[in-house]
Length: 181
Image (tube, rainbow, N blue to C red; front, side, top):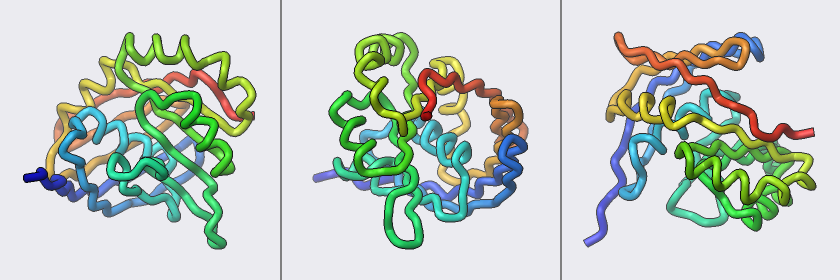
């Protein structure tokens, strides 16, 4: 019998001084049975970093033709495609053809570095692709915050991120490996 997704109720308060954006999101996030707490928290971090009133979580791991997070225009075009992990060059190419902007949030330490070394040269032609890495130390610390009911406060300033839940605080320093033109 297949395992069901675990539901997480999240109140996400975002204070992004870099974009002058302040918003509270009430999210119901389904954590796929194969998804780790680390991936879940990187997904929530990616949502916070791209916070917008039209930003949505998708079915994620349950579907191959959707990103983890997207933002669609009022007419239905995909403005932003956010993927997590270490997608193949083919997947990134397909994503870049479907959306105005694509952001990949990689994580996993040395494995992520080896992936980037492998795909880096093939991504130079994608002007709408951005790749941001979350260090192994940062993603591991984020995973410790995971809970089925969370009130997260995310503060972003000068590219640095502070994530807090209750009395626990994690500082994250995402590194931009590739920027969109």
